[in-house]
Length: 327
Ligand SMILES: Nc1ncnc2c1ncn2[C@@H]1O[C@H](COP(=O)(O)OP(=O)(O)O)[C@@H](O)[C@H]1O
Ligand SMILES: [Mg+2]
Image 1 (cartoon, rainbow, N blue to C red):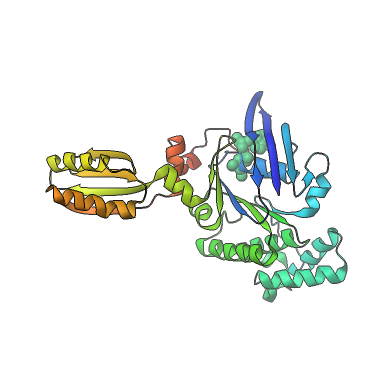
Image 2: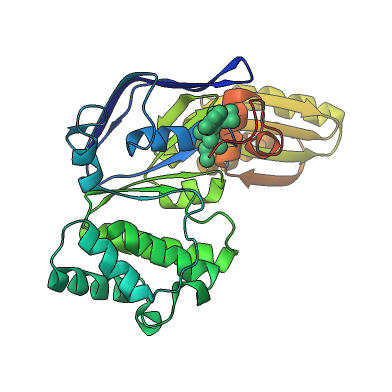
């Protein structure tokens, strides 16, 4: 559904070059749900804007839904839907009329546009609001209408740039229920960007971690967490001597990545923490090491980002290292 090679975009800002996207090679299959996860300024929006033909690449190629973004942009646009970052200007038109007009703009017959609008309004639980003007809808309702607008022409591929940013947690969950239902019902491929870790983790089946214009990891979230961060076991011991011995035994476990020991605490990063923890406790008990507390925690995608970049995503979101601003 999406193939890019060396996709690159730079901007000139005050005489300096900002390399927003640096040589992306993407292959995204039809029917997938893919997240671009990265801090502000990572290049997520720029990537989406190139894939949706809104911005020409500086170099490289991109074929989207079978059409080249440079040589056949209208071929691409007819097959994709997109929800940009911060759409949804208010208007005085009724929600249903906006949708029908959008369908007509894509060349649907009036009857077809109307049928499609009705189906989408129902799917997005907006049918009660069809006669309301767009300007009177709440933030979450308007975002759902934007999604319906992006889907009117039955695109095979839907791009969502930070679809839930600025919404409260309840509306965010609601939007996702709808998007994923649409994915099931219409079989659309979904590509979205987010800086919410939980969102990438829960909603995407494939997560591309983006930093400084590059994809630095690309896998299902479960695999990223298991391979890059690992589970964490934290043991509280009775004294320093026990800590030393516990750390030694932990290091002997076959799947352990890293062990750190401090005072009466031993921290272990390992694969399969759920089975390693009881094994470790049995070994410790057998040699008389006194363990007071034991805790298993599963890693988050923030741990993945930390292990990849040495920074947390939250820190990076607060203080982007590249030029601020952009789309
Ligand atoms: N139109 C533009 N002009 C100049 N710089 C831009 C423009 N759009 C984006 N950038 C810069 O490119 C980098 C990536 O931005 P963007 O793709 O918006 O990141 P993200 O969506 O991941 O937050 C940032 O440094 C941003 O300031
Ligand atoms: Mg963005």
